[in-house]
Length: 355
Image (cartoon, rainbow, N blue to C red; front, side, top):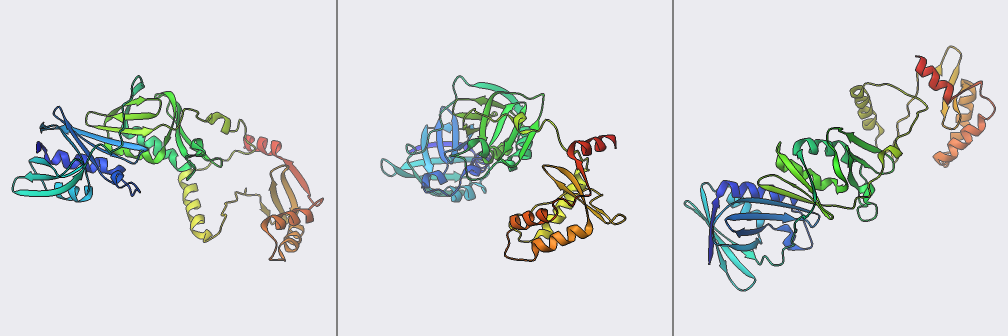
C-alpha cells in the first residue's frame, strides 16, 4: 500500500478545473482524471487528446500513480471534504486497485486503474515564450472564434482554427473574418489553435501566464495550472489579403442600433433556409417622381419607373415553380433598356464622401 496526503479543498478545486476538458469518448480512459504523486508534488491530468489540463498541488507521502475509473463520483465526494485528505492506494493486481480516502470523520473508497495506459502530454523543449494576461487573451479569442468553420479541422485547419499572427488574433471561414488587433501584444511565432480548446483559458482567471510555443503544442501556465493545446501548424492566412483596399460605398452606423435591428430581423425571418438582409438607402423609393432605385453589383445604382418595376416583378414571380435565380434573371431581363438613369459606383462613392 502507498499513502499520501493533500489539502482537501485544493485537491477538489484542482479536479474541478481539469475536469472541464473531459468529454464522452469511445476510449473510457479519456473520461477520467489521472493522478501522479512524485517528489512532494501531486499532479492531476485530464485530456481529450487535443487539449491537456494539468493541475499541481503540494503532497506529502509516497510516490504513486493511478487513474480514477469513476471520476465524477470522486469529485462529488471530495466536494464535501475539508482539511487534510489522506489517500491510500491499495493494489488489486498488476493493473487495477482501489483508493481509500479519509478526511476527518468521512471516508470513501473508489476503484482505480493503471496509469500506464493514460496518454502522455510530453513537454515543450526549446520553445519560444512570452508573458500574457490570461483573461485579456481569452477575451480576444472570444471576439473572433465564432467566425471559424465547424467540422473541417482535419481538412482545412486555417478555416477551423483561431489564428495568431503578429499582433492579430483572427478567424475566417471563407464567408467572413473576425480580427482583433492589439499592437502591444505580438506573438513571436504564427499559430493555428482550436478555438474550443482556448476556452479553457478561463481556468486561469485574471492571472498572468507564460506562453510556450513548441513545434506541436502551445502551453499556457501559471504557478499551479498548465494548459497544453495542440498546434495545427504555422501556415496562417494573411488577414490583409482578405480586407478590401477600397469600398464602393461607406456607411457609418451606430453598432448597438444596427445590432438591435438585425436581432429583430433575425427573429422575424422564421424558418427561411438562406436568410439574408438587404441594405437600401433612403432614395430606394421616390414617390414624388414615382421611381425605384435598384443597386446592381456590376453596374451601380439604376433608376426605373415604378410601373416598369411592378410589371417586371409580376412576370418574374407569377410562376411559383421558378427558383430564386430564375425569378431574378427574368426580373432584370424585363427591365433591360428601361433605366431612366444609371449612377456608377464611383460617382456614388464620391457623393457619399461629399456628404
